[in-house]
Amino acid sequence: MSKKTVILGIESSCDETAAAIIQANSTGVPKILSNIISSQIDIHKEFGGVVPELAARSHVEKIDLITKKALEKSGLKINDIDAVAATAGPGLIVCLTVGLNFGKAIAKSLNKPFIAVNHLEGHALSPKLDTSLEYPYLLLLISGGHTQYLSVEGLGKYKRLGTTIDDALGEAYDKTAKLLGIEFPGGPKLEQFAKKGNANKFKLPKPIINKGGCNLSFAGLKTSILRISKQIKNDREKFDLAASFQKTIEEILYKKTKIAFNQYLKLNKNKTFVIAGGVAANIGIRNKLIKVSNENNFKTIFPNINLCSDNAAMIAMVGLEKYNLKQFNKLDFQANPRWALDEKAKFLKGAGVKL
Image (cartoon, rainbow, N blue to C red):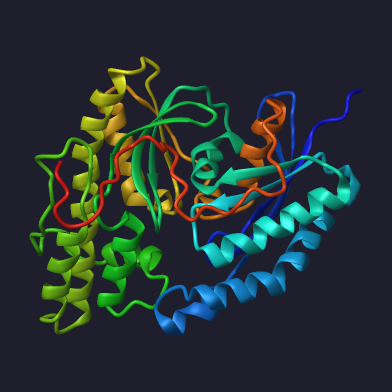
């Protein structure tokens, strides 16, 4: 029996130190042997956001231990690893460098291939960890740092159809939560607030809803939340504002997704819609996107909720696909904090953007 490929994944792009080991499977869906994540929420919550220097220091302190735990849980020895895959971008440069250099060191010491992975591609391929997924497909990537619609043509082949021109969706959730007095990270807790409120209480703006194709904007919505939050007098009104925010986001994504479907179908016929990234764990958003997909005859695929946020299993997944194609990198590969999936796409951010 031939040996099944084993990949070690390393992730340190922001505030999670993570290591995972996956093994190829004859079914096409790999087996996750371990997926260890150390969160830094307690370190950063007093500051209301991630402090890069503190995050990097924590990565340095924990990455060796986390990797040892991943190996121990997998039941394998370090020499059983066939390749090392590490996140090289995008992300915080001081954080990326820790995991990237650690991964390179392991690969060099074992004389095994090293694979640099785009963190966003990890999210894009994360559903492949628990389901069969064929190219091409439409991807909605919604996380704390990114919000994009992309046509995924194959490994490393992406065409951006739409993007946020200001805040990422996860950022909008966290900032709104902060304005409502919810401690960092507030995005997931905001959804719980929303369940207790009246979603029709506040009428909130939907920036560029009728222009810009499937590009998105959330800055104006955040400004409206700021104005209203200053007038809130009790918890009932907080719940109502959270519910109104959640409803508004769902309605924006519903309309923009319909536009993205039309743009995608001009390029591909395979009607598969993948939603990935940390915000893909939001149940209200999931349900709204399933609804619009069903109405337009698209098959909807989400990663397992445990695989939506940053993790190293998704990095190992990209590593496995690249290993099979012998797409290896040299050990002098540098971290790229602005590494885009579609590097040919026009930069669309900041005031004065023309849509």
